[in-house]
Length: 334
Ligand SMILES: C[S@@+](CC[C@H](N)C(=O)[O-])C[C@H]1O[C@@H](n2cnc3c(N)ncnc32)[C@H](O)[C@@H]1O
Image 1 (tube, rainbow, N blue to C red):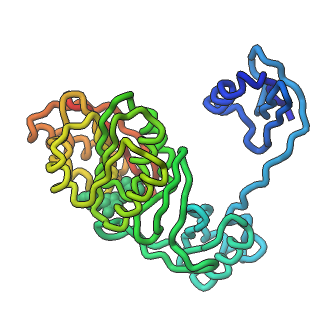
Image 2: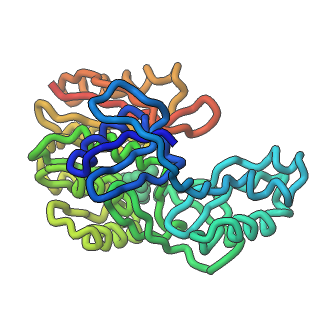
């Protein structure tokens, strides 16, 4: 395996650079001795450091669902099976297509057998209602719906049925955290069990991060997660943002609106809590050709609130349905 040989003292910085440029071969473990770290790389490149050949241990591949089931299901059944599953702590949530309903328990048992770290397998439901929660059917393993999930240097405890949570948004949480400047005061509307609140509070120099959530169970976990992550620059509040945010009577540097189904209905509340320079991140499910509608709604809400705004960016941060994406529309109050 080709490796870049880096003095131990420089290893952290070099690792960051290698990751940023997608040069590390993540299929292998690195090697270390007293003086040097050997990072496996995909190719050599111009560098002041030497490249050497080393025998490295290969990481075990995490079995994809299709790979696990190839021997157990017919080829046509496999066609119906979605490639991925969501894993939250030691709970796996599987999307079972109608055509495989009769084989759901067999599939779930195979997932359990193939992945030592999974203790419970549940069948995915549909996000519904104001709380955006989903009914999850138990298929195999321990009968629990509570998990502790780790991402972006935080731990999040939650009941996966009673609280909305998506591990697929961890990259978006990281992206938002990277945008934050020292001393910012941040409002996270629709904060759930506090994933955005905790990731931002833990990984940035924000002055304060405040979350507002209407689901009492999610709020309860948010309180626990703030404690679990030993955060002291946060506040989480229970209630409807329409009544809680005006009572907080504050103006924020940044406001997050992660309620893609109908966040635009709360633009008046966000604008009242904004000041000159505030950046608002509004999430919306849209097809690419419909994005201009959300931008128009933002402009109209700003005009109504007698505020000027500038659209900074539209970021595609997930897929909702075929050709429909989760967009984050970012705009600044001028
Ligand atoms: C899509 S989830 C996002 C939760 C969390 N931010 C996350 O990323 O995991 C939207 C959340 O908004 C909450 N919610 C819906 N309407 C609300 C309102 N009017 N006021 C406060 N929270 C609300 C729901 O209960 C749900 O937890």
